[in-house]
Each structure stands twice: as structure tokens, then as C-alpha cells.
Amino acid sequence: MSTAIATEGQSTGGFVRDLGLLDSTMIVAGSMIGSGIFIVPSGIARQVGSAGWLIAVWIVTGLLTIAAALAYGELASMMPHAGGQYVYLRESYSPLLGFLYGWTLFLVIQTGTIAAVAVAFARYLGVLLPWISPTNWIVAPIDISRTYAISLSTQQLIGVVMLVALTFFNTFGVHIGKLIQNTFTSAKTLSLIALIILGIFIGRNSGAISANFGSHFWSPRNAVTIQPEISGLPAAIASAGIFGMLIAFCVSQVGSLFSADAWNNITFTAGEVKNPKRNIPLSLALGVGLVITLYVLANVAYVCVLPLEQIQGAPDDKVATAALQHMFGPVAALIMAVAIVVSTFGCNNGLILAGARVYYAMAKDRLFFKATGKLNKYHVPATGLALQCVWAALLVLPRTRLRDAAGAPLLDPATHAPQYGNLYSNLLDYVVFSVLIFYVLTIAGVFILRRKRPDVERPYKAFGYPLVPIAYIVAALVILTVLLLYLTSTTWPGLLIVLTGIPVYFLWRWRNGSKADSATEGISA
Image (cartoon, rainbow, N blue to C red; front, side):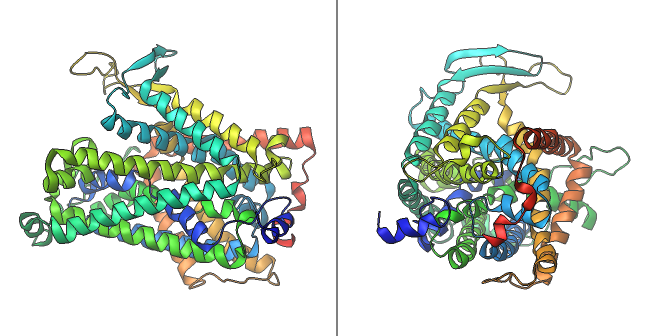
């Protein structure tokens, strides 16, 4: 560790500024690319029903994500401190709203995503090592209610081992964390580029291109009907005019937006970024721009290789595997498994590295466990990392008991054993709505802080202000409205999860005498 880096680190309470522009960009890109881009397009194709609209969904996702990242750049340049979005919400609104974000991040958003990515890692590692299986039980499911059970399969065990290993590595300093991140992000970015080149230029299928890019490019077919969950509203299908397409388009954004999520994680680590007022906004633009370009081109590759019907009906939604199988045959499953194992490992490293910095910032405001606000001798919040690991690992263990529409348990067709889902999958569905709300509130904070703190230095100002941020807010509100009306069962529980933080906030204030009311550290420090 150089003296220059160590000295600079002291200005942020002991953090070491060891993340350059390349490292920061790798955290942005690496946290975004997980397994979603290899799976989610299948479901989107069923919802929108055409190759043109499939690609359009990802383009709109890209425009929204880039617009949000550019707005966050202004906040990051104003407040280059650990905690990122937590600090922005605290400064724009109140310590309570900042806490509600941090609380939900710890309870579900960050830890639930980490748990999901860990099991995805184990799931695809199981393609290479068959003993890693969701039904190879170490502890068979123990039903604890009509709805839930607890189990430990070899797949769950490997997921937990992955979490523990990455957490352990990251306790030895941000330098180790960035080396892992840079290595795996480079590898999976090159893998995604290879998939794109193979699909568009080498393995292209003239039959698929003719079917997907011909007269049916914008004409929905075989689209699923989206049933509203509020009585009195009409069902929607993409082929049924402008209204149906709008509903399908908004619902499909759930998959694409959250396959492109976690780009904001670099703001959590602002205390460790060199020249953060320049490098964080720039890394947001570069990282998000890179990933969105790759995502759009990956979908172009899919429709160049597979007819839309095969994308819609890909086994287990593994559309990337189906595309490679068309080009290389049965060995494609192994190739894709290796790619996703690498991708998910790198993704989780970025999520684990960044998340603990939010709990650190909350603890400094006396709104989280005191120990998470301390750094170890390697200048990282080791206790926060450990607590995050424990909670994420616990989210891997509970299972949901799957039932059919009549309420009867779903059974495996081959073994007739009960089938189980994962608790974190439900939790992530629940918080989709809430996460979008936090994004809207944070971007609205750009307008609020320009009014409240007009004299604060802004080394970078939001691109296209005010039109681009307003466009994001309007588009996000439209999506939120559709989700509230048509996916009601996965929206209101998310709000409840957020609202559980209100009594916790006041309890923490009552016990610790919070100093967060000053709400000045993020800008004045």
C-alpha cells in the first residue's frame, strides 16, 4: 500500500482510496452482469410476443438505466462518501427515508440478491458436478408451516460456501476485492462478447432471421395474457392494440430492469474511490453504457439464432444455452454453465464488497449495529461484511412449499416428491416495486438539492437536466402504476417490508440518541 493512497484514505475515516476508474467501472459492470441476461429474455419474449418488441424492451431498459446513472453522477460528485444512495436520500429528504432504504437493502435488496446469485452459481456448477443438486439433501426439507420449509441441499451448501469464501476474501482489504472483481468481470464480459459475435456473425440462422426480422418483426404472436390482480380491470395481451402492448411492455421491464440493476453499488464504495468526484460519475456512465450495449446485442444474437417460438419456449428459460446448442450441440450446456459460474461469482463479489459500506454509513449515524461502523486493520468494515454474509446465508435456507391453483402441493413428475421454491425469490419479487420507488425518489433528490443547496459544489451536473431526469421519473411512475394494478400481489408486500423499518428506525433513535438529524455530513464533509 502506497503512502499516497493511505494518506488519502484517512480523509474518509480510515477507508483507503484504492479504486481507480477502471476498478470502479468493473464494479459497476460486474455487479450488473449476473445470470439474468442468459435467462430473462425468454420470459420477456412470451410477454411482448415479437423479436422487435423484445429488443425494444432492452433498449428502453438501457435508456432508463443510463438516465438514472447520469443523474446519480451529480449526487455522487456532491457527496463522495461511503453509503452512496443511503446518503443521497438522507440529505435530500430525511434520516428516516435514508434509513428505510438502508434497512430494506440489508433485509432483502442486497442480501436477497446475493443469496439468489449464490444459488444460481451453485445451480450451474451442478451442471459440471452433478452431485451439486437441489434435491441431494444434507438436511431434507422440514415443513415449518403450510407455506414454508427449511432445508440444506448440496446446492444450498455450495451457495453458502461461496458467500463465506467471498466475504472472507473481502475482509483482507479492498485491494483483494478489486483484483477478484477485475478478473471475473473481464472474463464474463469477454464471454458475453463471444456469445454476441458467435450469434450475429458466425452461428446466425437464416431461417430464424427470416422469421424474426421479416413481416413479424413487430407483430406479437404467442404472447401470454396478463391478468390484472385488481377486479374490474381488463386483461392485457401484447397483440391487443396499444393498451395491451403498454401493459405487456411495462410488466416485461421487471425482468430487464433488474437484470441491469446493481449499477448503483459503486456509490456505496465512494469512500474508497480515487478522485471520486470525477471517477464515480464517469464509471457509472462507462459501466452502464458497456453493459447495456452488450445486453441489447445479446438479444440481437438470440433472435439471429433462434426463431421467436424457440426463445419463448427455451427449456427452463435458458435461452443462451438454447442458442449455443443450435451452434455447438449438446456441449453447449457445459459451455454456458462455465460462463454463468464465472459471471455469478464476479457478480456476487461486487455485491458483497459494496453492500457493507451502506451498513457502515448507517452505523456512523447510530442507525445500525455499532460494530458495523468500524473498520478492521485492512480498512474495510469486516463486521458489516460478516453480518451481511450471515443474513444472506440464512436467506438461502428457507424454502417455499409450491402449490397449484387449487392449493394442492406440487409434486415432481418423476419422484412424486413435494416441490419447493426459494424464499429469497419471493422476497425479490416483493421489493421490485419498492426498489423502483427508491430510484425515483433519489433522482427527484437532484431537483430537491438544487433548490435546498444551490451553492454546493457540483463537479458533474446531471446530463440533460431537467428533461432527462424528468423523463426517467415519468417512465418509472408509469411502470410502477402498471405493476401496482397488474402485479398487486408482488407490490404491496414490498411496501410492507419497507414500512417495517419505521418502528426499527425510532427504536434505534430511542436507544442510541441518533446524530443523523443533523443531516449535513454527506454534503459538508
